[in-house]
Image (cartoon, rainbow, N blue to C red):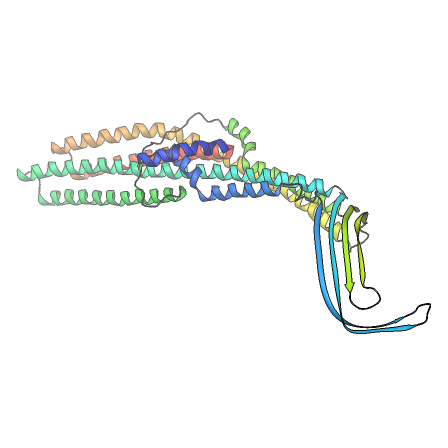
Length: 433
């Protein structure tokens, strides 16, 4: 998926500079600018930072401490000596207590909890990459679906424009007939009303196109009022096989992430179980201490030097908390396995249903192309008959309506087949710019 971003950088500036946008350019723009992808990529960076042996607790810890305390005290001491007891009294004696140390500690054994934690961090990083790949696939699918939806809306405009030409031709024929007395004012007014109505439909459809573009620009993180022309048409890949898609489904990032979650939860079990074992640490450091006073028996006391030692901590009983935590962790692992199986089943069901719709729609498209050609011929024939007074204005309107409906249905079928193709590839994890 990282190669995708290298390609996106190349095509992004070209697409905007040329002021037109293919679906390939749109996808590359989204991969570079989409906010959700940027967030997913940042999550990978966080996981990489955390995937460190130090985070897992496998490196030593070193701390430094220092204190310097100045005191004013009143001294009253009775000293036992060979010459007899004597008293020492002094008020306002000044003393200084200076202590400094550097201490290091490292875990030698804790039930392999460090090893389990490090492996878990590796799986978390891999899972964040799977989430990133899933976001890329979802973004590509969303951009392509919205792009082709705009193309669909623009195709409606083409159908309406052709229908308006028919209305204009009809009005022209009635106008000529009206001048020579073969048409009445009612037919003329009705034809003019029909033309204006179609023109209003065209303006409404243009608004739909602009709103669809705004939604797409939002996915591309571009201003909603960007002036960009869409250049592609709806081209359908008609050789997708269900068996191939089902086999590739297991490469879907969501299923891979679900499998990684099982491993993450299983390692949480090991971490919890490791807390029931002893923890052995090696401790080492150096201490420095210095006490001074201008009163009392001891005027200077100074000590310094290194030290080293071992420490062991053995859990004996804590109210069975660790045992219950381990049981809960095992349940979470079981839940992750169930969630993976549910994800696989849901994808298998969705793929089967989507593929059935895909194949059925492809069959309908073949028939609809023939119907579309017939309705176009019917409109032309009806206009000719109308010009010869062999057809009524109602027949022209009916033929015109059949032409529009056929055009809409053909575009919708192409769009439905394309979205089914996109969904099949998305679930299979093979969508690419």
